[in-house]
Amino acid sequence: MKTIGIICEYNPFHNGHAHQLHTLASEYPDALRICIMSGSFVQRGEPALFSKFDRARWAILGGADVVIELPTLYSLGSAQLFGTGAVRLIQALSIDTLSFGSETTDLDQLILTAKRMDCESTQNELRSYLKEGMSYGTAFRKALGSEMLSTPNALLGLEYIRAGLKYHPHLAYIPIQRTSNHHNQTINQELPSGTAVRQLITTTNSIDMCSALQAAIPTPILDDMIHRIASGHYVDYSRYHDMVHMLSRRILASELERFVDFTEGIEHLWLKAAQQPTWESAINQIKSKRYTYARLQRMGAYLTLGITKNLINIAMDEGPQYARLLAFNDRGRQWLRTKYDIPLIQKWAKAPTQLNNIGQTMHHIDTLATDIQALCFYNEAKRLGHTDYTYTPQYIK
Image 1 (cartoon, rainbow, N blue to C red):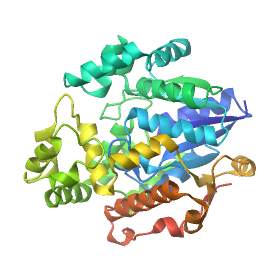
Image 2 (image 1 turned 120 degrees about the vertical axis):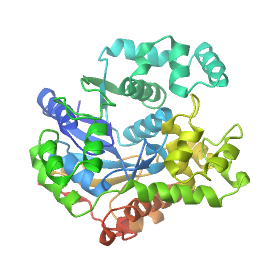
Image 3 (image 1 turned 60 degrees about the vertical axis):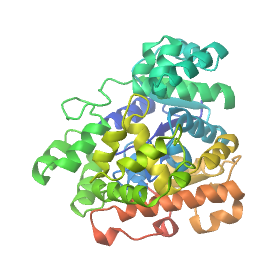
Image 4 (image 1 turned 90 degrees about the vertical axis):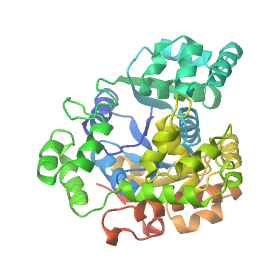
C-alpha cells in the first residue's frame, strides 16, 4: 500500500479528523495520506464555514500530505453522487486504499451490504418506498433491512464501497471507528462533531468560544482558526440564506423544474413558500419525510449555482475531469511527480485549455461556488471575487 485516500469536508477541521489521520500515520507510516476534500460548498447544501484554502492548510497541519479539491458538482450531491464522484477521483489518481470513519468497522459486512445495494430486488423495493414518500436514506435502509444505514458515516462508507465495486474494483478499505455523535451540537465529547464546532463558532461569544475551541481544535491549527474568526473570514449564513430566498422569489416554476431534485411538482410548493419572510420559515413550510432539510438545502444550492438535472447526469456519466491541488507537504511533493489519468490543476487560469466542455463547466461551477461563498463572509474586505485565480497551492514544510 502506497497511498491512502481520505474523502472529507473538514467543515471545519477538528480533533476527530486529526484522530483519523494520526491513526493512519501510526498504523501505516509509509503510506501517503491524500485528502479528497469538498471545496467551497459542502454536502449540507450550503457554503463551507471557512474557505477551502484555509481548510486545506489546516488539513496539512493536521496530518495530511496532499489535499485535492472535490468538484462542486459532486461535493453538493446526495450520498451516492458525493461518494461516486470522490471514488472516481481516487481511481483517476491511482490511489490504492480508501479510509473512512464509520460507526461500524466490520468491513466484510460493509462490503456484503454494498453489494446488495444494486441488486434488482433491492432497487425495486427502494423505488417502492420512495413512491410512498420516504427519504432516500430511510427507503434504502428498509429495502436492505439494515440499521447500518441509520448512521450517516456508515451510509457514506457503503456508498464509497458501492462506487468502488463499480469503478475501482481493486481499491482496499480501512474503516476507522467513529465514536462521536455526528449530530451532537455541543462540545462535550473527546472527539467532537463538525456540527458542534460550527454551532460553537456561529452562536457563541468570542471569549467563551476561544476557550471551548481549545478542547476541539488541534493545537497547530487553533491560533490560525481563531485569527480567521476574529478577522471575519468565515461565512455569515444569513447572507447566504437571503440570497437563496431572493432567487426563489424571482424565478418561474418552468425554470425551477430544470434544477436538480425539483421533481413531482415541488417547484410550485417552493415558490409559494418563497413568499414567507425568511428562508428558514420557507424551508420549514416545505420540509417533509421525502424532502428532508438536507435535501432542501441542496436544492437551494443547485438553484443558486445553476446546476441542472442535465448537468448532473453528465457529471455522473463522465466523472471528475480534473484534480485541483490545494495544498501539500514534503511527502506530498514527491507524489506530485506521478502521472494521472486526468489533469492535476495547479494554475486555475490555465485549466480551461486542458479541459473538454464538461470539464470547463465544472471549472466554472467551482469558480462560482468560491465567489458566492466569499460574498457571504462577515468581513466586507474578504468578499472579493475570483480568488481562485490568485491562489497558488500551499506548500507547507
